[in-house]
Picture 1: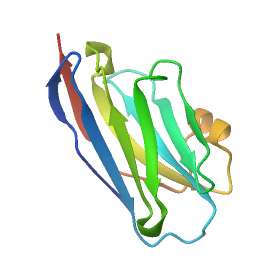
Picture 2 (picture 1 turned 60 degrees about the vertical axis):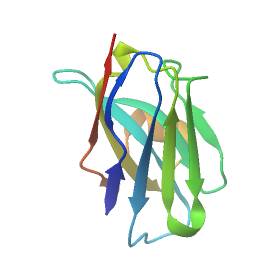
Picture 3 (picture 1 turned 135 degrees about the horizontal axis):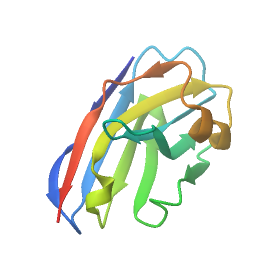
Length: 123
């Protein structure tokens, strides 16, 4: 199970930090990361981190967002800085075992998804 927190509303240029805690993780090798989706739009993989600490980002957030993890608690964080109105979306956390960061961002987390947390950025 995955539980997200930390969404909200912020003005452009502001920052937010999202958290995602995983419970009952079956294997110790996995990727966890974040996707986002707007109504009627395609789900976009934006940031991922694997159990070795390797990270990967979508071009749309590179340099503004930072993903990190607390391995002891199977929790990841997404620090979002310099937020833009186009970052407005539902942000979803996902986990997938035995995959690569590149595949995770493209094909999605196959093992579990969180319910999502809304991020709204006003201009």
